[in-house]
Image (cartoon, rainbow, N blue to C red; front, side, top):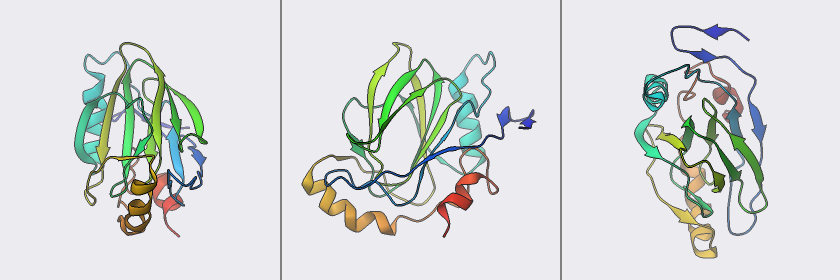
Length: 179
């Protein structure tokens, strides 16, 4: 693994999971991706700004800083990336029948549209940066039959991003999300 010193990004083999539709959370045939410790936050005074710069440099925007909702939800009209800037959390991805991941500073999770997610536990200082690719529209869906029915018709039409939010045009997401 070679570290790209100017950006503080380490080229890692991603953790990849496929989550199935459970009848209330549609998930997506595209894989969910986690890059553990991908962004070196070092002793950054503002670690969220470091993550924001990486995401913005790779064309992902509409950023926010916060945590992860404590209820199962997903987005049916856009993909999403989450980068942990501070603290730690256990997040269940894929809905109630999904998988829990322990996330720490520098970890990045990339969620294709429809991927359920929910905070299970978090340290009091948790700070997450979220961002979206340029094409797509933010929506918040819950694990209900009504949202699920609507989402099943919108998810297939969400455009694929042109870049990986961490590694750019040559990132693993490009190969993993292209047929």
